[in-house]
Length: 154
Image (cartoon, rainbow, N blue to C red; front, side, top):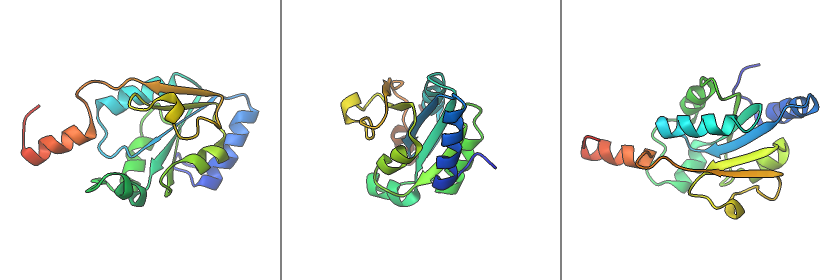
């Protein structure tokens, strides 16, 4: 078994990990162009438990959230994320939100970036512990895309 799992594989794997006492941390997002902000965020998320699971927005769901995106196709985004040492598993979801995925996986900890208030984090009603981690000022995929489009230097 690899680190990129289907939902059913992840549901089964999560149940086994939970039964063995592992603390499962879940986060989700587009992760279109991986940058230092993502790396720091994922390291902080991993530190909150034993297993870090990423719900990756499919190309279809990203298009609904961010016009003109994704830049990187879902299979490549999943491959990059799954190669990071702090990431244990990645699964791709097609819905607008990861609510059903969170319900299936039943993580112990739910993590989102600092632009989310805890009460507004999708799935916060399903998970015992919720964290909103701070963003690193000036580092975002949107800003990187703007710089590339305008060919501006950082």
